[in-house]
Length: 111
Image (cartoon, rainbow, N blue to C red; front, side):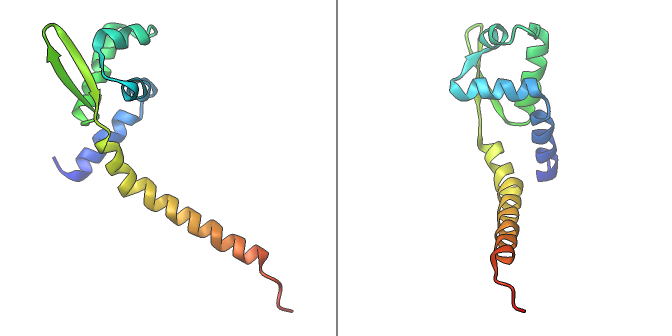
C-alpha cells in the first residue's frame, strides 16, 4: 500500500464521529470490544465491530486476542504522521500569515 493509500485509509477512519469517539475511548486505556459496546449503547455490536475493522485497517487500532476477548489498543503513530505531513505545516503557514497581517496592521503609516 502506498503512503497516499495509507493516508486515505486514515482520513476515512477519522471521518466518522463514532470511530473518533472510539479512538478517544481507547486513548484512555485499551478496551475489549464488549467494553466499547457498553460505552457506545447507541451502536449495536456488529456496528462497533465494523468500525473497529476500519480503524484496524487504517493502523489506528491494534487488536490483541486474550482467550475469548479481543483487546483493542490505540496506535497513535498514524495520527502523528498525519499531523507531521498535513496539520503541522498548514498550522505553521496560518500562523505565519497571521503574524504578517498583525505586523502590517500595527505598522505606523508612512505618509
